[in-house]
Length: 135
Image (cartoon, rainbow, N blue to C red; front, top):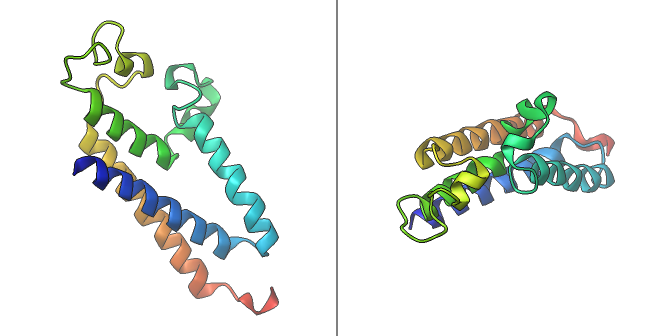
């Protein structure tokens, strides 16, 4: 149940992000170029491909704006914390590898919901105030 809730929140944030970029972009071609570019950077700085501890200090701020980071962290903590398997948060566990052993799944879920709200609000304002007749 909890996994579905967090996965759905990540999905809704991604959809709101797609609507927002489509609303802000000057053309459909620009939106089709910008969204994959942004999502690719999210994969790098969200903790998937570059572990958070290894992100260059100048780019660490960017990882806090990545919505995928919070959904993924919440799911990882939910799945592996308090788990007695060899992949748990033990001495060589997966949570320790990613630097997630002290993370709270509900705090990450809250940040994800906040990012969803901000992105959805920006998208709604863009659709309300941008004149699309010039496209």
